[in-house]
Image (tube, rainbow, N blue to C red; front, side, top):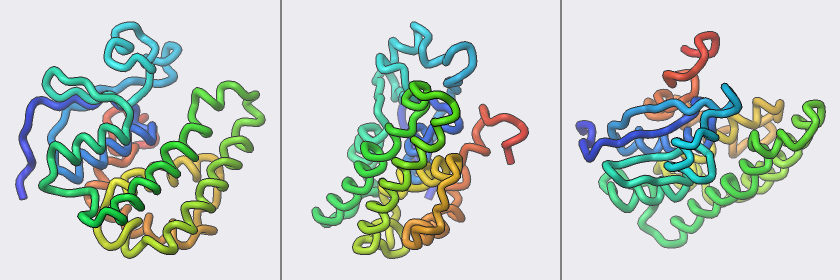
Length: 219
């Protein structure tokens, strides 16, 4: 299949942001061409805090996505929009219960894990306490996720087709390792990740392949 051509798409992203990574995956899986604009979350106090960027994203977060003159924020809402607007490469199952399970997994990660180990939260703690805080909530979430995947996973998070849940899983496991969480203690989670990480869209969306990735981390 050829690459889908639609209105000019711009993704405002930070290479290591797991929320940006989710959207990169959805765009790659749907073969939507896009322009990448880097927003450095640390440099100069964080470029996301600049007034011109907050016009796009009042929460001063990444990602933001523009399609023509429309602006989209919040990664899971963006992925849902892409699924509804460009359904030819579906990332949600047809069965209503399976769709629910995909969304349940997205919520476990997007609401129950990622916000609690986000940079803005960690800054509220002394540096010496940040890792313990982050790893505590990541482990709690992955325990729940492992239980869910016992009932839902096939090759991927929900059955044998890639879904939005997989777009959320892989970035969160990268973060888990950053905080020294042993992902291998969750066998279903680790197995699904291994099946996903070899796929070309997942390789292309990886942080070390992004234009703003520091040279020492890039591959």
